[in-house]
Amino acid sequence: MKKVTEGSIETRMAKFLFTYRLTPHATTAIAPAEMLMGRRPRSLLDLTYPNINSRVQQKQQRQKQSHDKTAQVRIFNVGDSVYILSHNREAKWITGTLIKRTGPVSFVIELNDGRTVKRHQNQIRHKYDQYSDNKLPDISEIPDIPIPSVSNNQTNVEAVSDSNADSSDTNDNSKSVMKPSVAT
Image (spheres, rainbow, N blue to C red):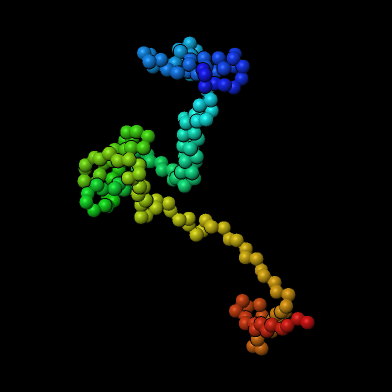
């Protein structure tokens, strides 16, 4: 109490008692104020070193948001054909079928040779068949779409009929020669 020289005697006594009541007891290892109130009162030291739990939660939340930006959502269903990573010396992918889900991210897979293995979803990839079950539409089902004509304002096209063709002839096999002329 001699070291505290600032303020009146009441202020110095209040600071001393507060510090004394925050100090853990040698026998119980709990501070008297904590036993009385059921929680640890905030002190000057707590303001100097803020709550580490909230800081850890904030950092973890930022890390999760950063990860979720690039993470791929993989959805596997029972019966899907998949590739799984083999744990042999050489890393290779082998085929199998999902039998059941054992957890949120782990599955039991039956391999093509009859063995069953358990794998995490990071070690599983979808197997897409080489040939799709979807049929292409029949050509007769595709509607005819008119092609828009493109007009060019700089050139005019004159149709000159062939000298052998008759003007009264409406034959579809008639020939015509197109000669472009520049518009002025």
